Image (cartoon, rainbow, N blue to C red; front, side, top):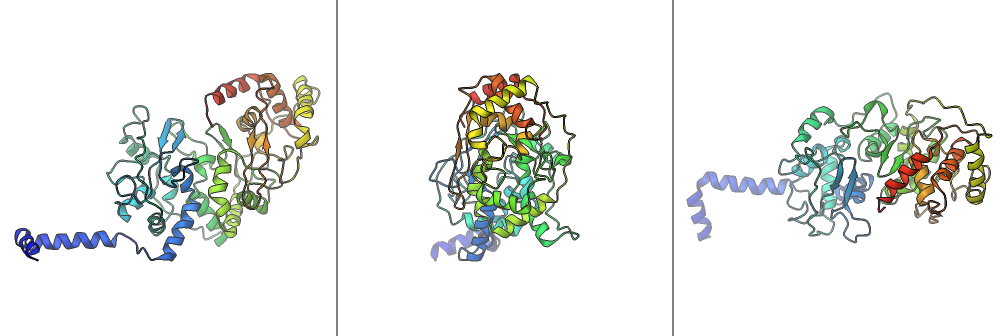
Length: 420
């Protein structure tokens, strides 16, 4: 008490008021640690937002501790530690600072985040959402982990350039429900555009890394894969899939047409497979309502073309045992190539990659079998890979541009430089 009296005498009433106001502000900016409903809401938002994918190093037993390199066309962005560790995580952040980082891309020190952290999508969420998310993160184990700094090339290494990027491309507007659509549709739109940030992978980008607004969800290259068109385009998108097909794919990683591999497999394991069924249906309803631009189909290559004859022979020898001579595979085991919009995408990158490197489909609680496709890159030449890829893209009433040996050679070199 003597020390307190001395301090009050020294600082005066104004100092005491400021001190008490600071204490009140600090406590007011933190959620009740016993608000279990808020924490549960935040836990679900962390799943829907797929936070674990970026903020946990694969194979690590320290979730949300950061340090994962997020590949972008400009270089790797290192994810932050978002555990409640006070020195290396977000434990010392106020809720207001956390909200600014998540929905505005502004760190507590005022520096701007790169949009590899998808704050342009999270901006559609509410401050109540981020309060819930923070309440959940406060419950995870604090981990002391100093993530290495992000080191992009000049001038991107100067974070101040993000002021210009934000002025050009960023909108802080929250999601506004469409009164002409159902509640289910609006829920799906909010999840796709906001927490799910589907456009981060599936929307083509400008040279500055911003979404091309007029090509929303129409497919884009990411981490050596082509993230497919998610619109209802019958040629290259989800036109042949029903609402139930889309929901089943998101829940289990498989449906009667396809099986998830690559980055999408990770998303399904960590995020959509753990989401509520009604939310997955809402996402499917929304995606099926999107009409993308349908590119005119090229003329299918005649079966008598030399590349088609060679491709058909390779397919019979190497592929038909699993995918069948008619290309329809085995439902929920081996994907249908005859009905796959993905293999006929404008960009054949994923098809080439899977032939060269092989792939393993995702395993979920609903579909624990995780069949794998072996690599054929060691066995087939660039010309042979091009031939069988061209055949798959143009057989069974399909039509797509042929794949060249030069394109396969380029892909083989690019994949040789990758460790994933």
